[in-house]
Length: 158
Image (tube, rainbow, N blue to C red):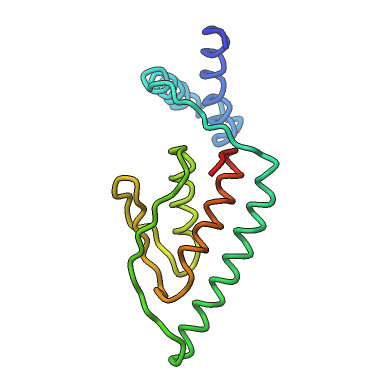
């Protein structure tokens, strides 16, 4: 994108957001103009970031999978909470993602944390440290399936 067009876009986007938030009150621009200028200055100081390639058409299947897993995992957590006879064996699992895309790896870790009963605790080099509610479940197999879905979303072969 040419520099002038990029500058205009960089200027108009924060101004438009300010207008959406503050409305048509001209007095709001006393604060809005400096805020927009500050936003543009900060944006120009930040390094360019490569946006990861992803497949928007894979978003719907991924969302359906994620919602179904959220419901199933949530139901499992509820059952374990109210039935003391069900096993509760919290543990820490080390999983090595096969994804090479850094954005995909972070997306995978965040998705794991959003699913009930799991929490991505840390990246230890190439390994992902995950806290699980039940260490006896087939966690590694479930993680491989989830990672495959994330790979499809980011267009990556694993």
